[in-house]
Structure formats: C-alpha cells, structure tokens
View 1 (tube, rainbow, N blue to C red):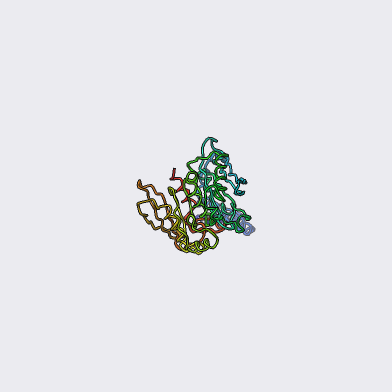
View 2 (view 1 turned 90 degrees about the horizontal axis):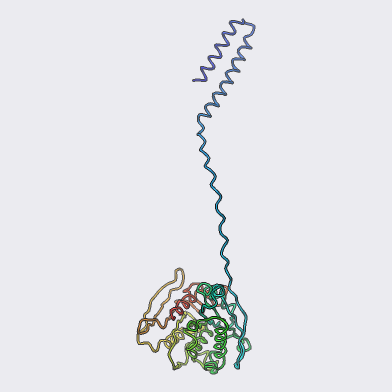
Length: 357
C-alpha cells in the first residue's frame, strides 16, 4: 500500500508538470516519474529487509586461554633382565622382570617374588606374553623370575617333572630352580615371606614339586593344568599320568597353600590331575570344600571350590573351568597356550598369593 501511494504521488506530480510545460514534454515527464518511483521502491525494500533481519547477538567475550597441562609424570618402564644360574646339577638361563614401580621405590622396601615355570615348547618371553604376568607385576610391584628349560635337558623344553632325580630336594632341576630363586633373593630386596612359585602344564607339575620340596622357600603354589607331586617316575608313566592314570604319592610334611586351575575339556592333561593336586594340598584340612559356581561375562563358566582351615582361612582353591582345554585362562593370544575367555588365572593367583602374608 505504501508503494502504491508513492507511485500515485509521482504520477500526479508528472501530470502537474505536463500542464505547466505543455504537450511538448510528456514523455520526459513520465520517464522521470517512473525513475523516481523505482528508486523509492528499492529504498522501501531495503527498509523492509532491515526490519525483518533479527538483531545481531552480542559477541561473547573471548575466554582466556587455558593454562597449559602439566607434563605427565615420568614413568620408569620395567626391565626384563637376562641371567643364568649354575650348580652341580647343571645350568639354566632365566629372565627376571623388575617392574618400574620396584626399581623406582626405596631400595630398602622388600618386594614379593614370583617364580613362573613355563610349559613345553615355551620360553620365558612367550610365557610372560601369554600370562601377562609382567603387566600385573607393574600394578602390584612384584619381581617375576622366569627360569628357562634348555633343549639340551629336554628337546621339547619340558621340565623333567617325571624323572626320579628331579623329584628330590637339592638334586636335579629342583636344586637349580631353588638356587636361582635364592640368588635373586640375595641380589634384590625381596621379602622372604612373599616368595611364590607357579607354572603351566609341565611347569605346573614342577611347581608342585618345588612347593612340596621347599616349603621353607615358597609361601604358596599355583598350578595351571599341571600334575600331582611324584605322579610318574619315567616317560611311560608320565604319559599314563597325563591321561589320568597317575601314581598317588604320600608326600610328607605340611602342605602349602595352593591354587589350581584346570579345564574340564583338557585332552592333554586329564582334569583328574587337578583334583589330585588339590587333594594333596588339602589333605590335612578337616573342613570339606565349598563349591561356588560362576561365569565370566561372554566367557567360560567355572566352579570354584574353597578349602578353609579351622580358622576360616582358605588354604586351597580349585578352579574347574567348564568347556576349556589346555591353556592359560585369561591369557593374551599373542602367547602360546592361552584362552582369553577367562577367568583371569594370573590375577586370581596373585590375589591368592597376597593373602598368604
């Protein structure tokens, strides 16, 4: 409406101009009127746009630049040290893991020591990778010793748990492993009350031997897919024991606290071996075991049986993992003989060991 009135005013002005100037200039007057109307229309349109546009929001003040983050604390990585130990029975190499948390701590603070005995065909690096025990050692501040079986002593790198000489204190391979343990205790600040031994398969059988022969040295034992003490005395009886037909030894002395893991689908070492290992460890207990079923989320189901002492302290644990075979449970697939579906055998062993203090 406003634009129409403006155009009408321009036409009236042009008409009056024509009356005054005569008929000679009608075209010029009309053109000028239309030009003025067009100019005024553009002005009006610009005013309408300005009216419709929202008011500009106030620009917020620029916040001050954040303070630079402090540099991360320097973390000292652990050291994986090569070494060896030799005595009259022979020589064996080893790897010793010293976590950064121990290396950077007060030198006078004693640390726990765990001896880890690998299975057949394995070596310390492979065993450490598969069990992830070095990662756990960083977390809790524990030294980890990995004795290495030599091909000269056994072509498959199995610990010779089935030889009679390797089932006696201060003889054969037990004397080498025990001497190696004592050497690390002498060269590092180790709590003598927190020295433990664990192993897988043939290493588990040797861990049983070490705990049985040296209860004064090792405070607790972990056996994963292993065999009972003195369950065989030669290679043929060893093969029979692995199938479940083992000798039942009457070991003397006070049984050590022990934690056992075994898969009920293990076709390499029959699960009956795990049952006998626990039976040896709990033979002095009057209280029967208490079974507790469980399941790892998206993993294996298991039955955990606890054997308490008279004062309620658990002296033995038996984990039967259902549907599992011959592998370290909760392990890393980059290592051999591992089963990532759990339960976490490494963490559970260390939890059990630490309660022995």
